[in-house]
Length: 187
Image (cartoon, rainbow, N blue to C red; front, top):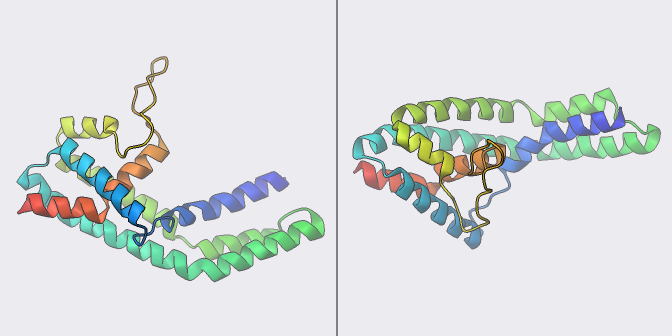
């Protein structure tokens, strides 16, 4: 039961933490963003019409991410208080109380869930703008200079599909670097 409560607490707060993990003040982060954006731009090779259609969608998504980051930053004191209480609960009786779990959930708010739904909807709209070949390219494009994509396993396609890959792809897709490249293509 204790593990379940800790897992629930971690799941409640983890999506919010990932939103604020990146920082544009880090020069290495900026360079990684540029590399991924250029790789994505080259792989998609958007037409001017596609770029014009995609640009407002990307800008809307960026504003939603910025609002979620602001909400996450504002919720930090309440999240620290909830985690502090969770530590106290665990020390006192070996379990996190329901009240502490509720406080953690209230501190987190609905921003991450709303953002996740918004990003899914935006991704579906973007796929309507892209050709079938471009959508397929997104499944295999290699972003960054890191490890090579995993090889295909027993009936599974190569390319490292999954939530981590989708997160990095969306991060590159919504980066200022990629949006700038799309603006240039839009003319």
